[in-house]
Length: 572
Image (cartoon, rainbow, N blue to C red; front, side):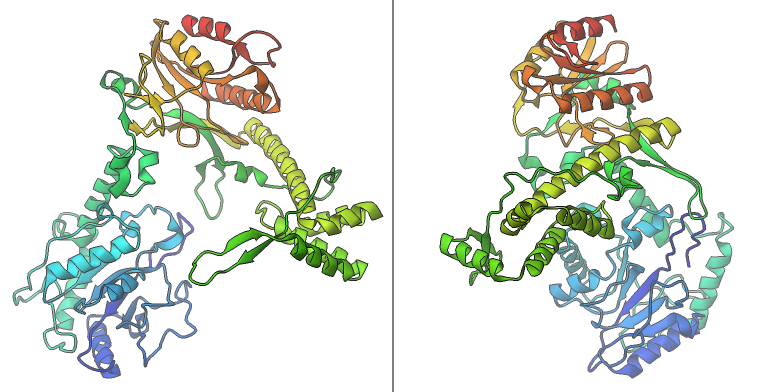
């Protein structure tokens, strides 16, 4: 059992022994293996057999801290319909003859507990110990199984094949044996060796290092993480399969600017997780969903304009030979029949069915309590007059869309209020976080403007181009970068705001500029100004944020004109 006082997460790694009997899944074979494991000092209650004929896992909760099982002996009984994230090690004595078998049995050890990175590095990997008459073929089968499960060749590490150990008073490794022949196993010697290694864990100079599987796993894990954080510091490409990464536009940081971004971490907002019985305290990158804490529809306004709420009735047809259902606009005659049927129901039934239909649609709002939602819909519908009820009965889904829009507006307001309250109370802090990627991948690009951070930048609209041209004439500007929406830097507050242009001055200041046309002097602009100002104040004196319009007429409070912005950059 892995101690979990620090993390609050219980993990008990389990090893799966996959045997290959010569004939039928004979229970005596597995009892022999159980006996040999017990002979090494493993308690009987730690071992369970699961085959087609023997099921010692029935009604056993393997994830429970009270469950003692640490070893499971099987053949192929775990291929389908079985899931245990504590299954870390597959020790297979079976020759791999079917790729499907390999894929399915590998699937039993690929989902690590809690799907998070653990402090103990050995817990961030799965392990396959295999023997085969053709080792290389077995390895290739395993790798193909991993590829089919969505892993690339870079996600697995292969240790060197181990030669069978020569007889020795104290064996250093388990010998490879025939599946039903355990005569070569000296359980007592193995048990003594395991005990010796356990006792030597506190004695670093005597503990085996070079030949340790866990030491090799840790080294491989460190190398993998360095590759991810170093050369592969490319969030967009990381989401792409390796096979197609070279097919997209890729532009790297220009060499002369590399030093200026090495070590640069641009601040973002984090939620402070206080220390408790289950955690030592932490800081988590903020998402707006975290700000839903305390949201309720009780007492909220329900003044909704249902004018122009209408439904488009469609039918869904599953055609023979197609794997994806297709939707069709329902013909007028069919729509008439559907509405006539609905109108034939008693008034109470029509209203109840409308409520149920709307609640089913609105129940997809994960931030809203189900009971609150039902009470809110009931309050709205019960307050309707006869004309509104008649309109709702004709278009319940249209009414649901109107209610959804209202709830989302209430949620957005709650997000904002909670954000500024938490920021004021220290529950949200702004700390160094975002690292500029080594390369960008714009769908369309331009390389005609000087001082760009990358070899080419994402293409820009006319206003952004005018701003960049003026930046290239300012001696104080070291470089500029066109921030790519949804893939670049975000001011992550009560919504994610991706400023258009990022600038670094010769003095090391980072300036974020959001450009807006005259027709965009609206509520969206004001929200971005408010969030940008909060980020600037929290990030520190090295950082600036500006909402930039072309001219000075009717500027929203907190915004600047392009001329004012250029003067400010020159002064910095």
